Image (cartoon, rainbow, N blue to C red; front, side, top):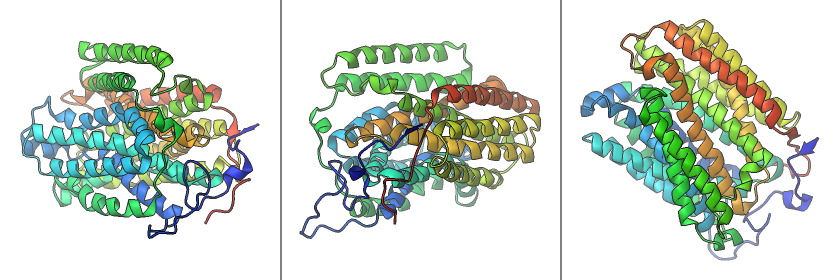
Length: 493
């Protein structure tokens, strides 16, 4: 059986002050603040990442109040949700490459500053244009920060401790979506919809102060000296943005609409042109062969499938609880608490399981649990069984998330950590858009039918069950039979 820890044992020792050039760098004798525990740094970076993930779903339950307060047209309302995902996912690879070029910590702070400032802009919005501009800038800040923050984590941890850190990160990637629904419901009911955005400011400002003190600066690498592939960056951003736009539109207007088909075709065409360009470029943004590596391809697929099932299920269930079962915003938030807990538990269990069994077994088991949970929700489309089914699904999806990150990133070299992080995270955003598009379309006309009933949602959950079952088969064939071992690494603090 292959193992993920392939590097020399000398490179797997726990770092003191970590730089990408090696496991331990000499510490300066000047007045520079000492680097605190890596786990404190992880907590700060994870807190920043959690804000980004929350903002994918936190607006869901606040949307009716936002629409009423700002007098949004029906055509404008969906874009409050989706323009953030469009910019976040579309610019992710560019953000990852910039992180490799200019330094991961620097771009983490730049992205966090932009995200925090644009959150305040959203909270102060007086009309649709101001709100959508703020959401766009939030997406841009998230695209700059997310891959850089994960790349920073990759330089702080090695060996078995890296696997544990990825377990924490994976838990956030899944639980953040559920926590967004919970937080959105509580804030909308108790404080008003503006606090859905304003809450990021008192969190973001302290993080901007603490993160530089807790994380070491990253030195330039040979990869950074190669510069930025501007044509490649433009193509990959345009192609990913077009694909996400088409998926978003499918959820509202159906799969046969020209506004769905044309962007999806355009996205595929641009990505094909990008692949040709990168093969010929002297300084490519993305080495096309990276996607041909089985571990990276498997991790990207698992991220796509897991996020699609999780975010699509959240969207579907929150809509059903509010519009069919007449739950209040805060009631919807409380109802999703077991789902959030299950996602975190699944990620931690999956992280531990990866030291004992292969990634293939963890992935297949996780997706099988997702299928079982969707089967329960499809058969009993009432609130209690629906939430129970989604909680079972979330348990498996949490384990799938950690497997996706582990497969893709555990052996990443520092010079490509930002780009690999961005690649996996791009599939996170694509998966979320695809999950909402497929399941909302299955429920009926993108959830715009005047009188949706329980059987409409049962049909949509059945489609989710089929997608999970197909994903199990693909994972069994695609995910390599590797596992992480705690050997070769010093005990973690």
